[in-house]
Length: 273
Image (cartoon, rainbow, N blue to C red):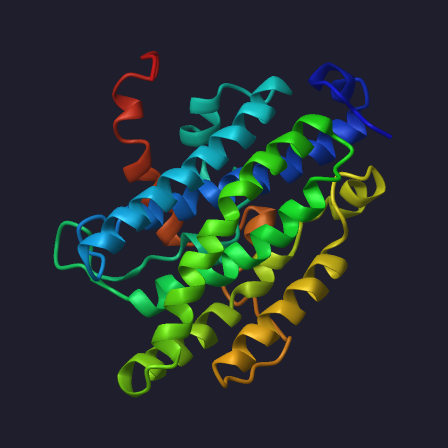
């Protein structure tokens, strides 16, 4: 079954509902992590990384826009409204991606954790690549085409974070100990990223994406290989200690982020951006 247009998708209410839920998760993941990445502007370890990380964050926001555009075509609302007007309980991003970079704030004594940022991005991009490879075969043709475009950039993101991950973890001393702590922290929330949400059954039934079990198995094999390369052992048991973002559960970190993200937009919601 191949669905070629938004109008075709709208004709099947169940398909349309599952597709919307999948797209929200994809868009919201990239949207909030792009914001967390933007908070490192001027604070990255060196100037070259400042430029590279800014570019990656822009890519992530661009990916989110692609998904929001598909949602808009399906009748979910304007791109701006989808990005800025929905309250936390309507967001479908994984909680791991909304957590603050560290203590302090961007403008007042930011004491951000570079190890956590590296580990979060590395394993997020690893799983994102696996999902994109599945989405390329999605029954919804516009989503399949979007996945092809995004995957071309994803290769370079993986290379970038893979270098940081290996270099810091193999450095020894404080760098290694902080990376080990970051891996443990990410693992405690990783299940929330690996799930597809309450409508997964319909997503799989309609061929929108493969099951989370299949995707998770692929991720676990790749993650285990990466950890073995830096002489770290970690099981395939992942946590979700702060709640399930795919079901609209979120933290105070998310609420504060949305206030900041929508501040300018809410000054004049009728403005054209």
